[in-house]
Length: 453
Image (cartoon, rainbow, N blue to C red; front, side, top):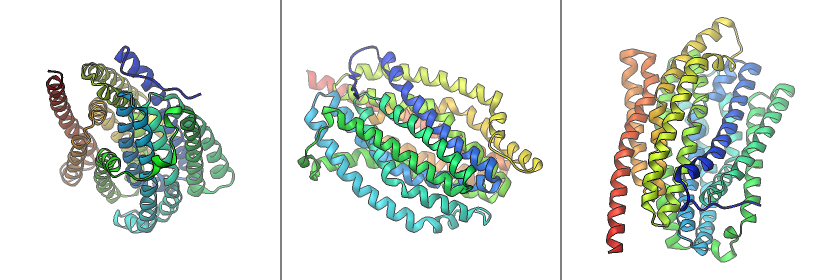
């Protein structure tokens, strides 16, 4: 049976580590099946198909991240209500989250299908790949309901301290995705269609597993009246979720501008850059895991008015994240080229040029990981404390840094300007988030002291 975990008592470091490890394992599995998609497409269908699928990354993430951001915001309120020991309030916000999620899915599904091809044209996708990318994304966007559903339900589970069930869901989904990839792409030769169908099918399975787990937890047993729209609850959830979704959206805009610049460098550079980008999720996975754990830890302890534990947890999480980042950076410098070589199968001269571009970008990204990992920890902590505004502004900073560097630096240092645009965006956002966290915590501690006097 699915379990909950109270993170307001016990060793912060032990709680955060034990909570984040299943998330990291789940992230690793998720990245693993993304890499399998890339391997199967790149080696089975060639560089054109690889560029088509990997080049869709920012647009794909841009739409889906809106759903994920809103679901994440809804989970913050669940964590705070659970930490405060208010089970009826948990049910109330769960019902309102479900109501809002249905409306969000309808909007996103309509917009993504109607404006997909014009968006690809605007982004200057090469004629060699645009129709393949269009086909792939049409199918992937058809899976928006299950992506929203999975993120909403896994967010509920994370909020009550359960990180194992989402890991189980991703484990099963990974196996199904790999099997379907091999069968649909390699055996049936369905190309990008097969890869997209495999992805959506596996997402359906992960959603169903989380749904079963949520239904088994008494704290989530809602009744029909919980689903009836309540103005104040809806406003509260949107205040938490909308800034995160907007933050994701504006980060995506910067990424899309960068992708447009990348596409202008030509087909081979695009393939190399996008191949390295496919590894970005793997580079980030431990950082996002520690960040997610700290977000839940901060949310529950904020609800319990234990700000002293938030401060300790942040300090320990930052140390854990920084150490993990250094290890991954070293591994990428030592073995990154060999890993990238797995993705590409084509004429040797073409493969060599693609790998040159890919490994250059990978080394630059790996060098910026310590900063990125701290960004995840501070951003999630602020969100757990109920402040989604500063993280949203940090997204604006990312947008500006990424766009300015992508548009200005290539004129000065060529392709390296494109590479450095990514870590420049991370540095700018991380600095703002650190300042925002300490200011927010100071205000909360002062308010709590006043309340106790």
